[in-house]
Length: 410
Image 1: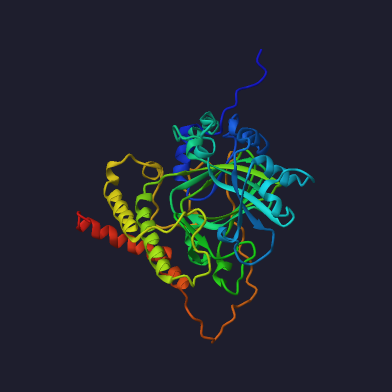
Image 2: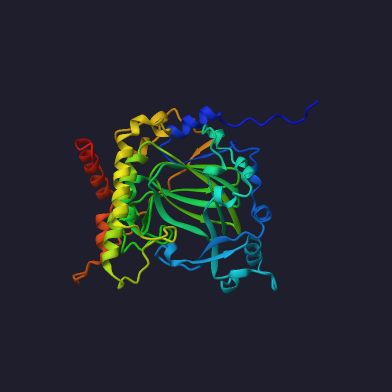
């Protein structure tokens, strides 16, 4: 007689897909990943799979500051997982490779944005360990996912992703997520410096904000959750997020899900790249501040950038001929976002689907940003922050789309 009942996920793939399509706020899925082989992807097991293969780690300083620690301000090393784990254990005499110059007491380490399709190209069977089809995304697995391995304190600066929405599975350890809705964009002081396609960064350190410089941030509403192993976080389109590892070792896997409006966003991203490269290439060598994110290999030429713009415009024109994506199929289109009623009432929140709660706003303490009558010079980056503000890019994108419709040969 069988003693163990077969595990039944909280939602069927069809139900989960519908929920993801209708959610307009972050939420955590529970009881959906039982039996997924990827839950065995602990750092120690990954060491055995990767062997001596070099992995690139980003190292940041463990310091309290009221400014974000962007990727341009970090150090980078390439080392094997064995060397990484030896460095983390801190045992004398162990081979830690390139980590030898970075005291563990002063630095955290993060192997972030690692595309599984590249990382495990030698073991493609591992792609099947990740089963996003449980959420109704047929055929989606590790090949369309990225891997994140970090130590305590490792973090991703607050940013929003231009494309799609996001499903994140926590595998090992805990991570804390701070999420802000799209309507808080102006309160987060958006910037395209450092420049990375599809990422808009906040100039605010959301854990230790400088309210004298960024006073509007006090009115931003953070939704906070600690993600545990086996749980899946849904991050809706254009929600800002800051993520930090809480435990000595953390491992997570995510997949960005394409949406219909990505076609339009790609026009804006092409415009952003064109303006950024044009201004920075003309600035000269006197700009000592790194502006190109390490994920970007180099500047592209103006001719290439204009080609990207036209390709993106044509893709928008052809959008009706492509198959529907998540948003077109399932998502409601509210006329206006409303914090009090962001998600349709038929989303089945309960023990297996938890909304990410919003922290209460801090009480006003009467503090006012200091005023000054000193003259302040506007620099190139100040100009770019204005030219490439998301609202400005959205207007330019719409004007280009209108022009493309009137001029089919564009």
